[in-house]
Length: 116
Length: 116
Image (cartoon, rainbow over the protein chains, first blue to last red):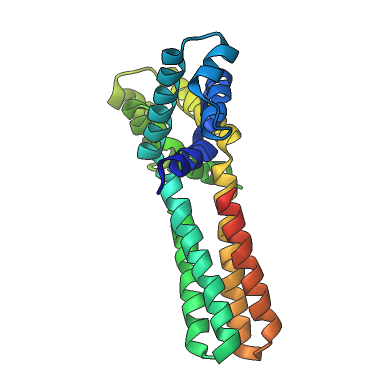
């Protein structure tokens, strides 16, 4: 996964655990793509300070994922749900009942994943 | 949801964020159903100490859920996946193509949920 996409995903899951200040600066960099200089000026801190804050936030977010693995799990679930979508489309074309059986299996896998 | 079931679910999601000591005592109470006295003796702390620790753990776990809502989201996903399972069974009986359309919709809902 591209680094910026992963940062965004980790932030989506665990961003609420950062401080408001961290979130503000993190969003400016990761989502609004502002330059370190712009943010430094806006926040009244040094460029290095912004750089360190982002690095620290990434570390915090990665450490939550290391412990909880929720991004990983959600990605798996999403992949399975997309598979079901494809299978329903394929079924509409070829009416192969084996596909329905496979959809049933995959939905069972999702339930299992979500149940731990 | 029954209190003990909710405690277990919150622990499944966020337990890794507690300290090892907290996890140990929490599991003894919530999963192994040991009495406060038994745990107090085993841990060399007072009954009140065990009681306070559990209360504090519940508060920590609930505060993660309040911020992240991941248990809530996983429950929704699980419910949708169960719905797909039922629909595949119903389809095997009545071959109503409307059910396939509904399965496609629901799998799309899961993808959306997981994508934020």
